[in-house]
Length: 543
Image 1: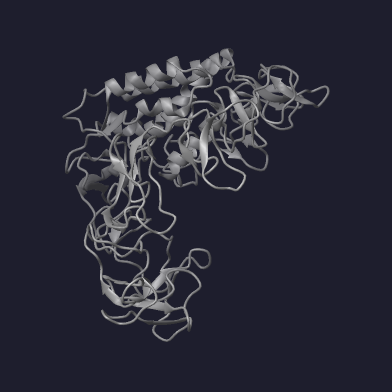
Image 2: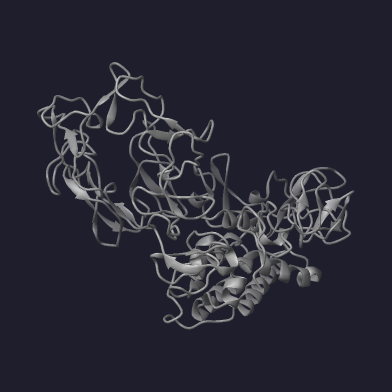
């Protein structure tokens, strides 16, 4: 996820408490100026046809604002201010790309997305918004213009050029080429954070961020110290306390705490880490380094198997190719062979004596299924893992008032998990500590007279308020000097999410300042004069 996407998700969710992050994450692909991945989906030659981004973004903002007014989060009188604010926040990263036909809007996905938001209940779960995925799709062909790699239609191409406004889609991943949409490069190369081009790993002393291949085989990134590539211990030297503990081709001998050459085939060993690649340590048998095992072979250690995607399955006790998204009805073990969420591997179990276990079948979890972890995904919604007193295997049981929980998903619809127990949400006037305790759309607000907190509706402009805890006023108002006052314009108090309608929030005074110039640090486009932010710096507009 790009820095701009993370920032937008965080700030929008402050205002749209129930459904903000769903459409925002699906509509905010990598912003102009970065080379990370864009929204998935077909290019301009397939799919259901392009649509106007401005039209969709206006409709999306209207859907968000209408929902927020309906659910008591935004003042109806302020809807005209709400619309351009959320249009920029949710879709600003796409405006230039769609205007230049570098991206297109899939009209069917756009309409499905809008329909979900327009029909959402105030307590709608975020999962209903997966239909919004892929509204924007890359459309720029090889050699065509682009602002980011998310604009390029071909999966193996990226966006590069002498400057952002003159970049084109080019082959990606090799040395000197743009980074792939995943933010990675071909094997052995790194994606340079500054140039977004594939480069050789850094030598000792080079700056690093901890990304893949940041440093060469003789060094590692000192991420929590100097943030530079530091030399790795060589043969005979003391091992590092953190991985990697030794230079390439060496292992840390636990008996001496010194780096030594890895062991050849047939050499006695005590761990697979001590053996040369692609050998493993046959601990149950010869206790020597042997060639890794082929698929289907009997095994005992997780890393005994040959192949990058093969592991020793602890249920089957054989080498299996990793499968992490099996469909309903497929055979599974819950480890190397896992089901696609929200499916669970029903019926699978390990053998406590170390022998063969029992395979299961992928299906939706049900009440009555065995479970072992409270708060995990062993059980369906509105159910919890009822564990025995001895801490052994439990059973999924239907939730009710007072049943044990770790999260509210283990409680009945409308209940909330408080102090590890499911409780009925509180009505207007009942005391509370946070808004999660209140029936939606009520919020936990502090009384300006008594100072006590209780569940109630957010206040309109001019209403008396108390500024302790959550903002008691509807958007775009905030509590100042005991009353709900307008916020977000230059010179006014910042909005509760530390943003402004246009410009930046001064952290010390908490007041809105004029928009920022290109090159200034930013979180989202609303802070910039151009309306464009790559998650780190304001960008110049190209039109």
